[in-house]
Image 1 (cartoon, one colour):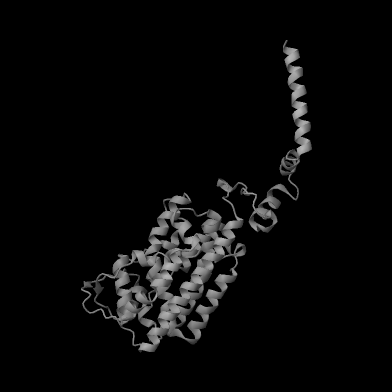
Image 2 (tube, helix red, strand yellow; image 1 turned 180 degrees about the horizontal axis):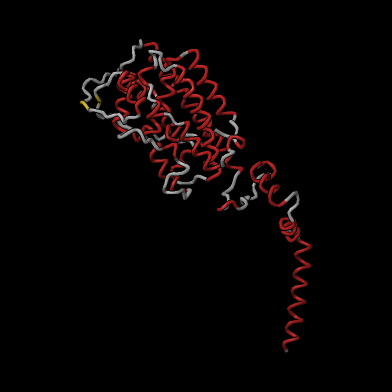
Length: 336
């Protein structure tokens, strides 16, 4: 239904500060490390060579406002406070699956394109397979039959495919927005989700946030920024990449808002697969999850709910009160 969206892009700014810059291994060295399954190591240097015209600096400054807006969406604020429902978290995971499937398909398509090749780190960064594990955990082996892409996420996916096929230089913006956020705020969200949803300590359900092939996230981010800064891009292209990064944030915020709206029709589901509890607001028939659960487990008509509705009628309550009074009087007479 919906594509686990990385709120990580929203808390990215507060948690990732530019500190030092690494010496930059060649693109071939990074590629060979990935193919051989080795974990990259990074050597730090001072940041004296950082220029305001570097792409990493332009992206940092040019997306500050978008970061702030994303951080202040209701969905993100609730998540950071641990107010995330399991059913909504599952739907957000679906959103991420569709998003990263599109992103990594286009990254693979452009892995030899000089406008993106230096940023090709499939072993270290790619998330699709991790998301498959999360979906298997939440939905079972037949997870593919239980999910579909939401409208907001489909717009995001369509844009990624367009960029990858027609403007590959802009793919840098989408990779930067997603992966750098995952390595920053995403690590905070991992802990929040694990605690709030009582997920296993063995990290089932949150594999998306686990980067086994990155030995030091901060140093890897420095390497990635250095690679971006070394891309042979003119000022106009850099400006377009910053504009596209802001567009990526807008797509993320649209998915957040979509999830937030859905969350208003869902209520906290009971543990261990019990029926969800409806809060009585709105029309229950408009909540597919709730309706499907009732239809599957109670049938088209639920005697319990019918009885509760009947008892709430004023006339019935009056009759019940009279019956109780008579019964109490009879009991008192019998005891005497």
